Image (cartoon, rainbow, N blue to C red; front, side, top):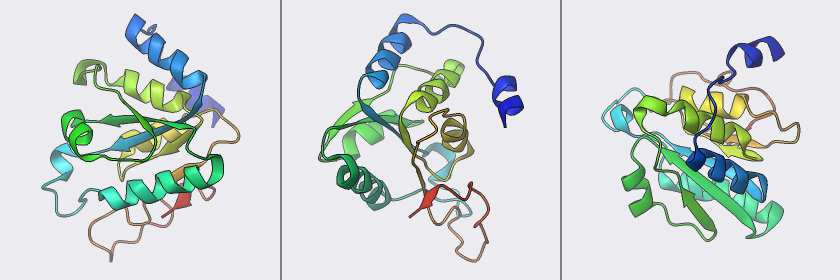
Length: 162
């Protein structure tokens, strides 16, 4: 695992905006929450996680830590997320990184204490690269829209599937 983490290490330094977000992530109980939309919205094989999945995942952390958690929301459709994601805790919408530097979102996700991922390899890697030994990763129980597709081994065994 360490060899892969070293190989995937982002060498380029963060810009000022990402350094500021990283500093905020490091000062709180931070949870990355990734919502994949884009091509998944119309993809009948994959589909998207519904908002109730994200609410349940956040409730898990509220039950663990109270409402002192900070959500850092990442998406390929940040405006949709900002307009539709309503949670009883503070949400930091990360909207400043473009497709040209979306690796910065990946780096920020991996810096959070915990991760709520979509059925997406992008957020999967953000959680996997998270070096926190006490991290809790919540992943969707159904990775594909077609429930007949077996997906029990798509995440590490210690990730919580809901």
